[in-house]
Length: 465
Image (tube, rainbow, N blue to C red):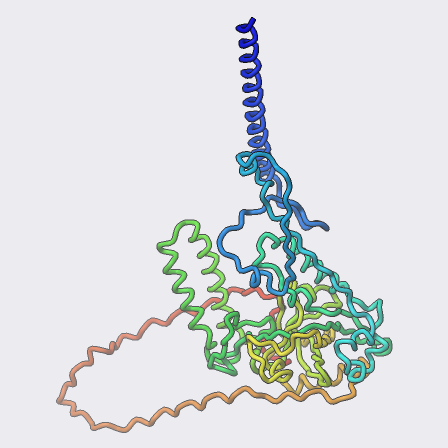
């Protein structure tokens, strides 16, 4: 009887052991199948388009050192640790969902200002400076550009949420107070008004006017969207630097891997296009020319602000005439040339904005760009802006008068008159100079400049703004 009882106990223990072994095996198979299904689904599913709500996806593993204070510059960070009872550590460590960070960014989308009173909350002098705004700034004047701007900002937040270093800062997310599409009821003059901060654009170059380079910003580019055909044979001061970069890239191509060569091929094409463009065109100069920058999204449609349109910049109790001289990224608003920035704040430079608050008002007169472009004519700029501001009700103060600050071109050094030397006797044969050849050097063929794509029409080289 005792032997029978012991045999039954052994069978029960053995059965329990096999049951536990089977449960652990099935659990492991289930987890592996789940991980395999998730991986296949992520590899085979197309990249989802931006949706109204953030999509849950398997985030990449974060590694390395992170300075959270700098990483979330301007973004309020709240942290909390939540725990829950789990299975054995050997099981939880293979489950990717057992130890995770659930990242959610909360952002309030602002409401645009709609009336003169609301505009006055950040620009108290605006209604007095431009009294005609009272009959044009109405709730129905809010432009679709405002909603499109913040849709772009939110979309980029969703796309970059796994790349925290690419998230817009608080300053750049809340950089636009309003966008209004104005129309004067009597003159029918249209204008696009937007309130924002003021960053600095020091880009642009023109060898015809300023043969010496002055670009000091790390993000400096010698181009602006406003351009015209060169009028002299003086080279652009930034041409040697671009040619040197092209030379270095071409050298690297010789020893690069096939994958790297594909990247360098694109870089070579871009640099050659820049060289051809900088040889053919002149551009505005941020240091000397008063212009503003608008987002590319603001240039769409008849109510948009187009390159070359005349404009005003209102800061405090002063009104500055300007033109739309450059096009910027779709997700940021508020940028003026260094010339304007220094008038607003003398301490401004390419790395120090003159105004961080949303107290700059930009008014672009739609459809006023000249049909042909050329070097800046500040007197013409003054006259055109004074005439246009009268069409929206006038201004209570004179517009700022710009003075040409471009330094004069250096006086060419006169060629010295050669002094007649002694006459060589015909009986004496001079020793030939080995460093000179009597054979003329072949004439180089003219350079052919392919078209360089800019978001602006190709202007005639004969006019001035």
